[in-house]
Length: 560
Image (cartoon, rainbow, N blue to C red):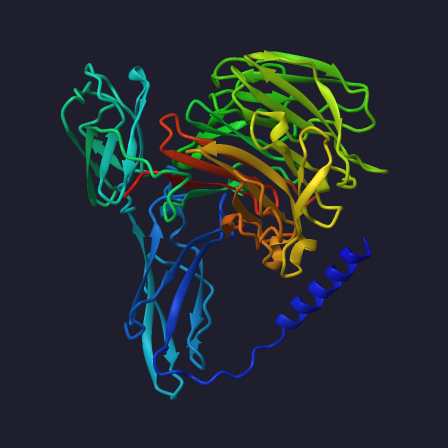
């Protein structure tokens, strides 16, 4: 704990130093005037949310028009016209420029006049006004033929959709997702279409911009192994401060029927979004009389629930493959241990065939080093086992809790676990002895004191075994946002170094934070990876209650 305190004090000193008054900066010839304007809502549900950050390409212009999104969030149907007359505007000025009078809350339905003084003392009048800008997004985000069990593979660069089949197809409707407020013609959800021949679909954005896609029967060629480097892309992020995230919660996520399910862990019914597009909340999940502690999903389209069971209570596990149907109980056990269980849930494999389900006990007091494991073989679930891990120390309470992820659905292939209170490292555990055999150390820059390197998940995609670590940032208000790491763990040779510096690391990215305040404990999150039904795409989903965000990265294995 002394290490944590010293790092905390060091971070505080660094941050306080960075907040001192800036030094005098000489003006540069290539950076004059106003460089950007930020518009912020001041009223209503989205008060203090940034509507737009407008970068000004031509600093010599005398009329600055701020493009306010027509809807906010842009994926919603909430029009912004009601806010236009009262919006807070902030400016970024080039060195030694002055703007008078000072900016503040402006009526962007009309021109607002100011005097801009350049570094050489010259002055000119400028005006600031707003306009509601319709979206130009016209992307086809997902495409499938549910009746035929076919998922299309989208090549956005070439605007093609490959239906991976050579069978003769009857005319059917398609299911798809497109950019918010866009339209598609012809609409394959309305008109049954014969996809035996190439079909052209036109997606039109809200502002009239168009993209034309060609759908054809074609089995794309895969690369030989893993995901294609360069295919990784951020599909979307969602601001959970506008979606009911409570201050005190322990969020987990799952996939079911093309939906991304978010569970806050506070006893409320989980909510769900379109898994392909994110966007606005679509509804709540039917869980009957159940209270969810956490959720997850397997590779076979099944979502799993469990309750949060105190010592002496019954811990139960449920499953469903349809959000509109109540889940079915898989098993129950009495929590006869020393700690609560159910704040985190993990599954590797497919529960209809072979899988391993785990949930760690929340430590407190003396700490925990145990988890519950259920093994499924040939679709038959075994009795819950309490597993003790050797060589990883103990974790204490939900704020520093652990999550377990088996490398494959074979126990002998071992598993991964990390938590906050033991060197901040990510451990690999021998599946037979349940003893630590190797580890990745905390962040090499010394910042591990501010992260919980514990949220893990695994998946097999195109012959490669991947491990994702979601390092929950305890202090996003200090700029320490959560970080996502992706590793290739097909071979455990080379599982050494640090979480951010190892030969097995394939990708890392800091996530966007929607939270400017000090997060409330427990500060936790979740991560989930899922291959597409056709095997050409892998999606990586994440969530946490410090940055108050949920998001999705996508990868593919299509040869180009």
